[in-house]
Length: 176
Length: 79
Image (cartoon, rainbow over all chains, first blue to last red; front, side):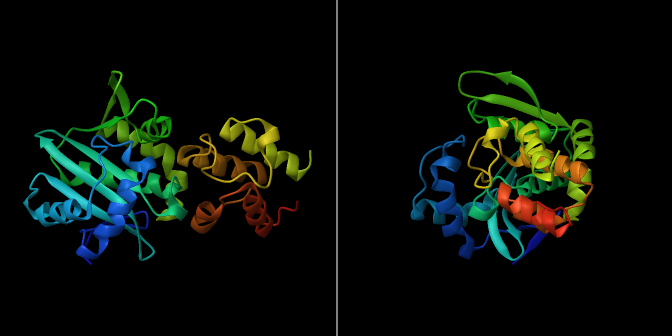
């Protein structure tokens, strides 16, 4: 297990072969899959092929999320543009779905992006009916910049993020 | 106001739901209003109302109204 970084008790680890079937099962759940850009179900063969290509994804970072030695979810960072990143995450472990750990992951991931990558903003996109994700992203400092029937596009600068994090710190500090 | 009434009021205002919905059986994530963001608001409201500070385990474990009462009871709040 290779821990890339740790924030708020969440370990962001490199994904290992032993993680991928659990991640696939979570990824295929309707309540997770239908919130994604690619909403198709993933087969075991597709998941294995994806895993074997991870090292070739030079502009993408993929993380297995661990809390108290349990795999709880997945996060990624894409650096497809020179000055911005886009991020995605899900918490699959039933006990922690929608818990404050999602906030911990979101804040930790944004911190890592702004600290480690030469970017000025982070982008996100959410399906319009996913009000929970919209509220979640807005709590992390994202602002809506564009919306159509299919997607809501959001972004945040480091300043937006730091202002949001300031509001979250009284509770986040319990996870330090 | 009793502690139970104070708790119901904190839940109702934090989750933006009717007080009649705040029953012991109400569980986290079973209604759209009780999501991760609302959970943070709720924790802050309960801490302020009952002058307690919840730790990480309390915050994670507080997955129903009934369990919230049990956690607050550990902090000497009687129901």
